[in-house]
Amino acid sequence: MSSVKRTGDFDEKNRVEGGTLYLVATPIGNLADLSARAVKVLSEVDFIAAEDTRNSMRLLTHLGISKPLVSYFEHNKRERGAVIADRLAAGESCALMTDAGTPAISDPGEDLVVLCAERGIPVTHIPGACAAIAALTLSALPTGRFVFDGFLPVAKSERRARIDEIAREMRTVILHEAPHKLRGTLDDLLAALGDRRIALCRELTKRNEEIMRTTLSGAIEYYREHDPRGEYVLVLEGAAERVAEQDDTAFWQAMSPAAHVAHYEEQGMARMDAMKKAAKDRGMSKSELYQLLLVDKEN
Image (tube, rainbow, N blue to C red; front, side):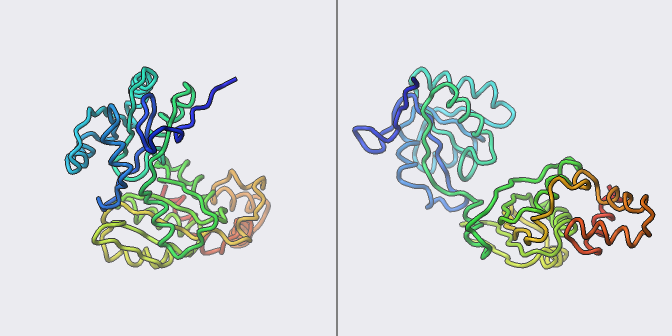
């Protein structure tokens, strides 16, 4: 029978306990958003694991906190995760920080939490800023049901498959995007999804916070004239019911748009009729399908 340690049942409320991993959310732009509890935990743990120790050191110096730092990031998470878990198992306490926002959301902290769970090491969370949730609340799009999809894949086939999934997703979709990839991502989304509503959020909680509520075509038009700057959170309107209820087992699901059209042409349909039929299968207009065919041809 496994034992369960209740991380909240301490003699002193919020006391830092040895042998515990603390996931500490840090500000995404405004230092005033750091909670008093987060400062207390960072001040009292035995050591801190950080995605970028230099970045975290600046925050800790600002707070007047001096603690041993170890790096923990995507490319050393396997070896360093084991070391951190061993120290926790030996009774030390550790705070995990990401560069900004909540650890273990779309970052390697997820793996450390899994490792601790497997070894029976207590993990607790110090809530705070999360860019995805902040953007969702500001988007003016439905918030009752949503899905976080992080960054789109870079590999073309994986990227196309992910965007096809998003095209059928009825819930509001939250994405992250880097400024140098924003224009390409907007083009890809418009070609696959049609002209949906979108909120583009940048510089969240900072002096120059910007929330643009528009459509995919409107965003593309705007960024023809303006250079994207800063990291973006994209909040995208979910699919209409007619698109979302497409049968996921339909024969064309694994086909590219070009192969889908070719399938009907091989049955004797004229090119334009084949495009019209394929577009209907996918729940989009013929012009939207045409844009997908252009993207396939370029790639």
